[in-house]
Image 1 (cartoon, rainbow over the protein chains, first blue to last red):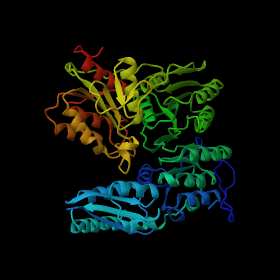
Image 2: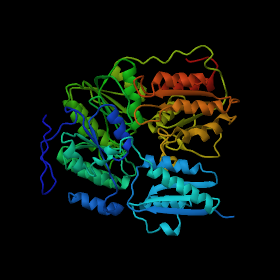
Image 3: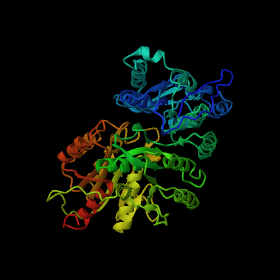
Image 4: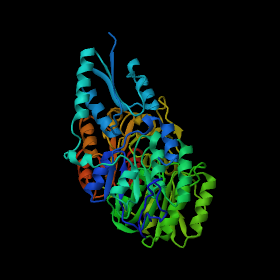
Length: 71
Length: 500
């Protein structure tokens, strides 16, 4: 299955050409513990680590609302 | 003289929980420091700090995006020395290559610009933020594995429903293990590839079953974790049903194993209804559930070991024991587990097979909750449960959290056998057996038999055979599986006849 992903400049949304979980090579975005990133990298798995910090000044409710707005 | 409490708030500074725990431990070891912790300033963390007597008034304006350093020491001078060390640790370069850090994106969206063919987002941020990050991932066409725990169940339901509409799978929250296309994610093991697909609402349950299958000649196509609450009435098995759909369509998978603690009755019906529509073979392992009627193409497995055997279509030999391995010692059985599902499996064997009186902090139906004044029941304890891990690392990451309890248990004259699990693989501690051996060697006068099983493979970074050898050098009886370990413990305390 194709894994083409096109992102809209305005909304940040992506096209709906679904990427199959089981029939595509695993490529990972790691959000959180850096150890998981290091181990995947060592194993040769394509992985990008996100330098994450709590969004919305660390307010979980505001972070939830923002995620629903596509932020 | 009262303790001196010192706080430092670093605005908009984030360190992940493993880094925070590592630095907290270094600071705690400073002479004269009574307690210390580094935590992000979320409301729940501020409560933990306050409960530990580590929160001074000066920190009360901290936000969730701020880092709080809390130190309680015998004097101001000691506290300030410890704080200086904490700041030193924080500012130390975290990587060999600082250049690498510069290119790191700050969001999932940014990451996708670097790696547009990404399939999975692995999320392990604090639980309060996990669903928001999961939502950002599913709306960008990613499947999601959420390792974070402490996620409100209503948020889990909402995210899974949204993901289902988008055709995205949510593994988790509290999903510790997955193996997709041979790639172990988070706490998983390096297993042989093969035709057996595994779906698990249980972290160590998946690890035990996949490693037993691999060790005894089979292989794994994929192992999909769904999170411990997926088969609850609230979540309704959304991810389990999607995972069945995926494995049913997967040409590499011919046999599907489903593992969970007992699900909600109506959810069981939904799962079995879907199983019935498949032409593939299934093994259903709902640990602790009474025998349930399964469809024509499925078999019911009461234990993880039985699930592996049914998937392999052959019995798993128990490790042959050397004569003299088992000596009769009257007494109780105490299990100190890092894996919750292994703890549940042990309860099942003790209660159902041996009909012993059992207590636990995560009791199965028919097992009583732990009572400090109960001196006649076996105790089977999950040391990874919330009450032991609040603000502390999980025992699979830091096995020393088991040390004190193990030492006390070994000195307890009423104990005849001690059961331990050693869970290895990616994400786990580099040498859990060595840690156990050090504790055992510090109690040379012990009378209890110590029996363990190693959940892992010889291809794991820690190497299963090496871990076994370390344990055996300390007179630990190492069983082929957790079930076998429990049965050996029963033999130790029930008779002097050796294994039946």
